[in-house]
Length: 179
Image 1 (tube, one colour):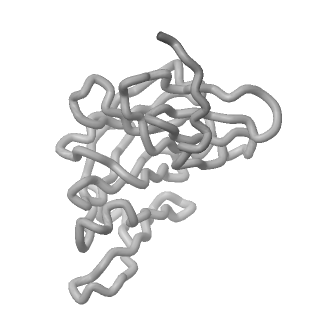
Image 2: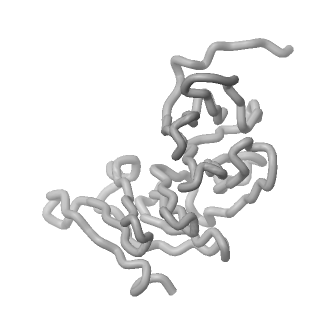
């Protein structure tokens, strides 16, 4: 039976598109884009029974990425044109069972995320290869570590707990650490 449901109060992971005309968000396992002023809301994933989460815009606003357990084989990273319907690419996140806080590099070539084992991971979108760049201090941090890109896409800054349990700032170099 098809029914309409207002999912507004369940919205999370909201962010504004680079041109400021639409916002993207997750609500009850679906990904939506909504206009800031004019136009219609769009259900990008239309995948009832699937948990789609953590949507983000590409730097140019022409693509979106999100994590999904579509097919029930564990989560994968999905990338599609901003309409969500065309040029869909699926990238396995390998041994990661969940993912949080994705961040797209300003040059559009990489996405970082934190997984269920608090690994800080980087995905090369061209080769579809994933590398672990660091591991968080404790399990409580997996949803709280946010990796921030430098404007030239060469550095990532993040904070995590050190061995003394104090938060510390780390800087990772794409040039020297990506094989």
